[in-house]
Length: 283
Image 1 (tube, rainbow, N blue to C red):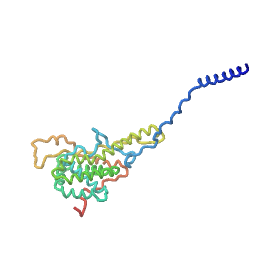
Image 2: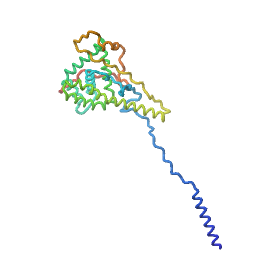
Image 3: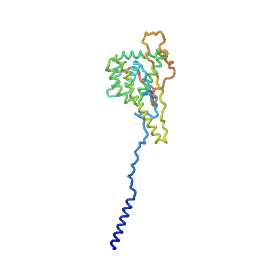
Image 4: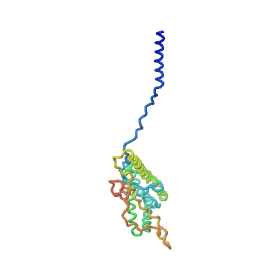
């Protein structure tokens, strides 16, 4: 009898323990740690400076001094771009410089004709002040292609375009010039896009982590560069009435030159590039 009571007591204790176990709350798995968020302040691309101004974008492209150019003007801008490459790009074979000098030798007559055509465009458009307006645009173009952060990506493109120009007859250059100019400009368009993305990421970082840091999120865009005039009539052409081009031209540009693109890079100086052919002892 006593044994039965002891067994019943033990059974009751076991039952109570089982009931308690069933009623205990189930432990939830541990909450995973939050994802790691990058808290380092974004830096400008390609070694560019902070607070740099970039051009505005119109129709999917950043405004540059190479827009709305005639074939003759495009060819002359290509020549200036390759002149910048000859002075700025360094390679073991010194290829950009050799290409540039060879270009002047092989396509010299066509380049001279293009230069005369561009002079005529400005003279017809602006009269006596035309050549001064052209020189101001030349300064802007040289500074554009000399933008320091883009040099590294610009130089290989300049070598490719230079090789194409040397491989084709002079008669094909005017047709190819707009395409060549677009190819030479692409590294700069890519840089502006990368810098715009940097500004976007900087703004996001500022909103989350930069409460104690003062950052200029949207630098003032660069003013639009000057637009070259259209193609003037050939020499000896005498219209009986004033041409539509002459009727719609703006007044001669008497204001100071538009600040060039390279001035947006603090520390950059004015153009120190020669327009004259580079001296060389090699053909």
